[in-house]
Image 1 (cartoon, helix red, strand yellow):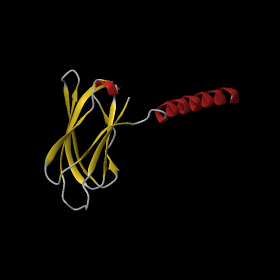
Image 2 (cartoon, one colour):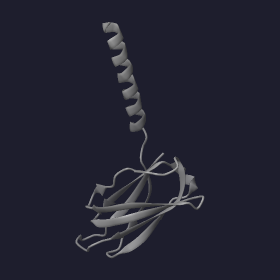
Image 3 (cartoon, rainbow, N blue to C red):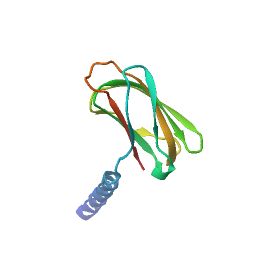
Length: 132
């Protein structure tokens, strides 16, 4: 009886370990960065097919604070995903992990809509990362 319990626990431990290990080795790849202006504005980060396909995105803001309203991801086939963020980023903060619709997608460009308040001595920088 104890052998069966140990066997089940060992199998569960191995499954969790291997699943976590494969996710830990999936690195975030920087797709681009833009220094943003002090106003209500929109900026693009051009990605392109050479970067490969991605299933997830994440946004990092450094150098200042900004209010991110939304971002529009345009894929190589012309389809678009409008992603509502409505997030107030502080210097050094990141967004939630954003799952892209349709599995692995080739991204043409990402347009983000934001506003800033000139409260920091430097401009905020928005970086977008992708994971395959």
